[in-house]
Image (cartoon, rainbow, N blue to C red):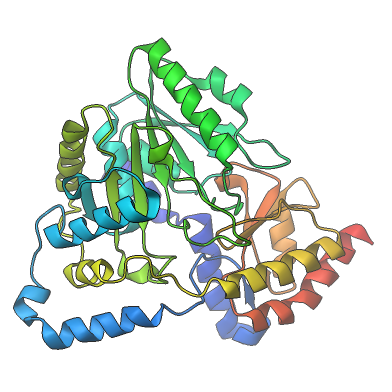
Length: 394
């Protein structure tokens, strides 16, 4: 067997390990006694247009065509609808022939990294980062260089970034709104990043690509705007998923958008097609391709997440915990009251609280709390959080 694949298969991600523990524990003591904040699984139902569109497609479309193969890179009409939405919503140049339909953002990232990287290349990202970035990058034969962010804001630390570029740097990978911190990169941060990428590309004599991972783009609160990165740096690939915006994580549908302004954009897109072919990621689910073409711009009711954020964040601060207030996504990234976040999470388990230690996110000493759960569960969990806090802050 392939030893690396065995190792990946024999140990699930820390998030999945805790999620599976939660299911087992709920069967033992009752689901009402387990407060599972482990998994970023949307708790808000999809917008009504999703159900209506699916029913309409199933009733009106020829079943053979509806469930048949699309082109390997995705249905042409679907890609045209997405390109039109990008042009209208973001004011960015977009071409249907530069869009590749995928099975969610994980596939988008893996394909993009495999399309851009060769063995020994480096990909820079910023902690905290989604735990699977390292797996995706290593699958492409590259090395993930994880840099610390500003601990007070979780914005990019540009002094650290400037020192990280080497002749092996191929791309910078960003995620805003961020999983696990919920932080949204400000326009100032994005402009500084674009300027540095231009500068370093010139110094190194090669294009450094920007890959932006955007499953949480629409999940923002209080009127916060998420800058659209292709409008700031032309050599950008957008990896998008409808899992969070439409509450469809199990349907695995998303896309890669190669900005037509990217250097050698057509060749990069063909490399994306080639990577999709090599990885077996061709012809994303056809029913859901056709559904999303008719649901561009629709978003689930994010007000529920905002209510959950305010309820939980305010309570935790009152109890003595500290975290950077998130403007997007549905996570709190809380500083552990003891240096070992794993030990803290084990103590939290004793009170039925399932939290994810930050080590695999590149930030030891923190825990992630996914508040995409019912508001009722958050309310019921607060006494447990308060009792846990008294163990440390009393």
